[in-house]
Image (tube, rainbow over all chains, first blue to last red; front, side, top):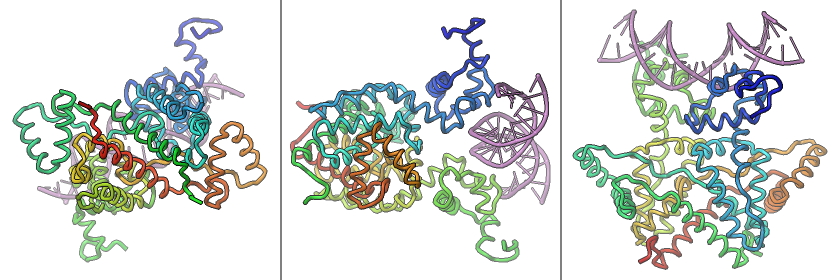
Length: 237
Length: 237
DNA sequence: ACCTGAACACCGTTCAAGT
DNA sequence: ACCTGAACACCGTTCAAGT
């Protein structure tokens, strides 16, 4: 696999210092995928790689840099749409491409949000997205506001607003909880019931994430399109 | 300084166990305000209150519950708008009220997002927001999607998408950085330059957060209004 | 009953000693 | 020069002993 100059097992390469930055970052992604972001510690990652904790600091100067690197690995895997007059579809495609890539790593958004300084990879991705707006003829001004309006949704997903608390299994207990909730949060209960009915699921079945994401994305893109068609400017002459 | 148990200073009350849950939560808010969220540890908070760490566990069963409580304190302070036919303005008012309250605690959004189970206070706030849509005549269906589209923006602010990296002070170094950036991130540089020009600030002066927030909020509300006026449904007959 | 110190099982990171 | 174990300064939380 990874050609070693004397011997042969893949673990050997790791143990002998053949461990590269890329393998560290990839292992970090795997560890977060398997065990959650809170489990991703320098010590655990080292253990996972069969290496002493301090060995990681050869490839990554701090945990912050590790996380930056992890974001880079993920973002680098996002497909780019090609610029052209059909900006709305292009932006849509690129955001949905991000969604395809990042949705497999539910912890990714938290990491992206936690980074204070954007890496070159992240900047390039954002630059390409702005480029799609500009290629479609949007003003710098409007493209700027559009980027802010997209916000973290440009990474293809959002945090859930509704908590996903499973109601008690026991029917009697569930009825009691629901009755209490219905009095205190009538609109939430009504809404959850309607959503569950639409999806034919039992109580608390949740929402259709894919639908909600596209709904909001299109709402924003349609709004921006309307402003663009109208020749909107933030500082009218 | 710290009066002894015979005397009567307000700190005394704290040391004698007069410390209530509310004071713990308020102190936590103050500590996060002053020193940042990462500084808010159980141990530091205890020290801040002149109390042994374990004393906090009398009022809060875990750090997670402390954070839940902190969110409650903040959210409880948000003004409610009154329901009525003018739903768009009402929603706008309530979201901007949240913004007024939470903007003083820049770390608040991170805490809100990190909570997995919403507290009654949070649920009530969300319920009231849904109530505003419903009072305006929106269908359960549309109100539901509207809530998802608002997402964390219902709390009055968003994470910055653009990193706020200050360019080097040295003019020569800055020119070099800018030239390199202009080649690699042409659209970002163009955009930042335009934004700075608009605001008459020097490079990296940043964006007008207030404007960007209202822009995106209105984009969403206008879009929802249009769907409502059109009698939109997610499952057309 | 209430309170609390010490202890446990962790962190990220420094640093000096070992090869 | 390279590597690494021990150590440092922290965490949140348990628990048994003290009052």
